[in-house]
Image (cartoon, each protein chain N blue to C red):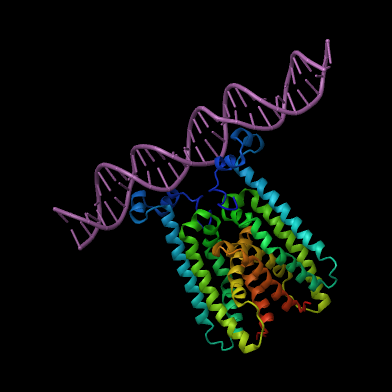
Length: 185
Length: 185
DNA sequence: GGTAACAGACTGTCTGGTCTGTTTGTATCA
DNA sequence: TGATACAAACAGACCAGACAGTCTGTTACC
């Protein structure tokens, strides 16, 4: 589904690839839409786990501004690995089709968006008060990390060059470092 | 197609909405894929026209770094208008389905990506030498504008809040202003 | 013996695409 | 000017295949 989108992915094809049957599938799922919901749910869970893994990995960075930069660098270092594991993001496929977004999967993705925003905005708000910065809209700034991820997925898909993911996360890191006044060692 | 994706948009539905017939359609197009190509081509042309419109509108800004910031502000001011005209981007829909990307539409989109990159990277390179900045990778930095657009489209779609487009372009502008050392009046 | 898990033939509907026939615009004649 | 010829533009019935979902029967397990 990440490769071809939801509508263009037929159940017959999925079942053949999975080596199972219609009977087995409809025993566990109500419909194809139900599968999309389940896949999205699993994907969102993994996504939020990644968020927390990155937060944990940067927990030792005391300064909140520096931690945000380190947070982005964490994913930058994972960029190539991410792109070799998946050619795009399930969110792109799901958000493309209104029928899916309207059928509940949109809300699931929004959970992920909100989780990222909340955690990062918290750090940014801390950095803002501690560092005397005027960040205007910490929520929007926090959202820009999600935005960069999704945009980079599309750039990679368009150009066929997976390295763009790492490059874009690098750009984001440098932009944030300038904006937050962080000098990296 | 922007709303529902390519595969989920049936010809019958398109023709009903257009008030025309199968005969008329297949007189002008070889196939449904041919329509996607034509739509993408038209969309890319409009996109590149927007790029040049923004360049023209900021032609009076002499300093290249300040011009890049003004360039982003131009689109920021258009943000709400963009989102009221379209709920997402055709690029998202096309890049989601591998069959489309492989059938030539991917190359068309790449033309747009390359056009944006070329024009903005040129300004950034100028800003880099004139301002004594080390921008590391001007191509990647230039790409980040495209990335922000596409990512913001997905964020808007996920949250259902069109205002995110303007907000994200605002974030991008402030990030770039910090990074390029531009102080806005 | 009973139920959850599975297999796969089957069905009604929808899909992209074809085909035959009709309309419409237009160039060419008297 | 008006009749004729002809091709481009269009309409919609039609078709074969693909699709999601159903149903009947079988296996595996407790």
